[in-house]
Image (tube, rainbow, N blue to C red; front, side, top):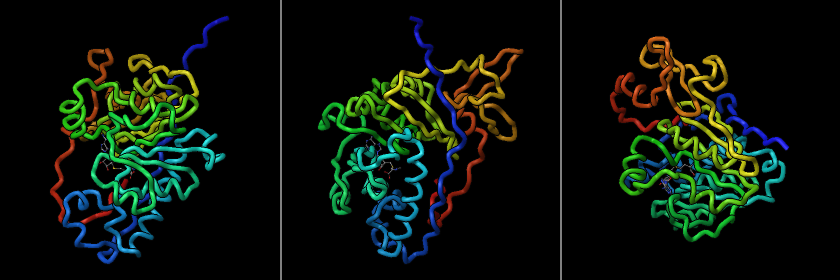
Length: 296
Ligand SMILES: C[S@@+](CC[C@H](N)C(=O)[O-])C[C@H]1O[C@@H](n2cnc3c(N)ncnc32)[C@H](O)[C@@H]1O
């Protein structure tokens, strides 16, 4: 019998993300926003919305959840009540509850001390760190969602270097609590790295979707064999693994699975980790005093 060749990481078209609704002042409890933690996270904190504002916010989160549900393998949306998921970094639960309205059973964990608010919203969960999860048994959940928790620039200072000098692995603790026929989905911020993607690929069948803001959505189907990272130096530049990016005024190619910009030097290809390059090229915008809905 011949061994089956590993399938390369899959790439899908850009994932569309809904726009957060405009927020008139009477949609928000202005006094709650005096708390810096609430002010920073207001658009996913149900406690800062007035009843009228919460209707609009929940409609947005329903739309965002339907967009993210597309990341799950088809067997999940085909029979939603059958599956139990865990939302990793759930804060006070707007997103977790939208998954529950869709028909899934959901649990949540969150690093911040807001679990009373999570429960007051009718969600189950506890305070925990995605690098620990010690109170959860092996193979407890069918799927996990890690939506915009990892890999913004400060993450490396906060979690990887200071608190977890041995990272990677980034996802081992999460994998432990998932069933072997389960799925792991999420969205990584724009500082995601080759290490992260290689680790995801080692867990099962990996598919990636570009998301605006240089973010990356992913699906790992744990029922499939590990995926293979394509070779940045060999893949055709006009093939599916490369996207067009602008660094300052210069058009370049980004190797999406590793967040690397490819440069040609003396006829040879060279791959450079992309985020610092893009940041250098972006002129800093002055801070606006106005509270604007996030466009993610
Ligand atoms: C952008 S928000 C969450 C958005 C998410 N889609 C939601 O509403 O469920 C990221 C959340 O992850 C939490 N978080 C960050 N690092 C974490 C960690 N290591 N373990 C658990 N939660 C974490 C943050 O406190 C924050 O509430």
